[in-house]
Length: 179
Image (cartoon, rainbow, N blue to C red; front, side):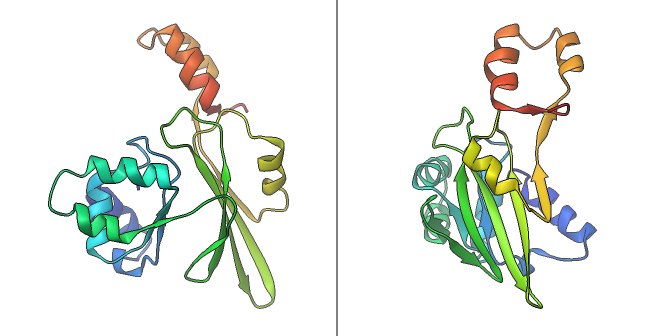
């Protein structure tokens, strides 16, 4: 949900599908590269349910400054780590991740039963180090989507980013390609 609506449509076109095929969207956390308000409006205008925790929902709704606020709010569905929820053929469980975002950060385990076999997909973005309980969720996954957003060697050589940002944000709350 962090890409703008045009970028999202391009991504979907590249895999021969369209926005009307989306049955639901999950939000991991409130940072703008993971939650774009124009994309939220686009999803809502297409009747696509949006799932996230209560705090992230509040942040998302507050960010929308036009008449579409009510429509977007109507399409939000609050979730918690305590309860599974369903989108289409997937049973989904949220889990906490350590990240420096307002409202918290979730990863997701998607399970789908096909021909008697359960496929397990684990989706986790922006986290520094997974907890033991999160690590257990990665076991026996058929597909893992993990976002690593920096190379430590390149980050060390970058002088445009202040050292405190490197240590207290990037390295602390984002895994590296080496990790």
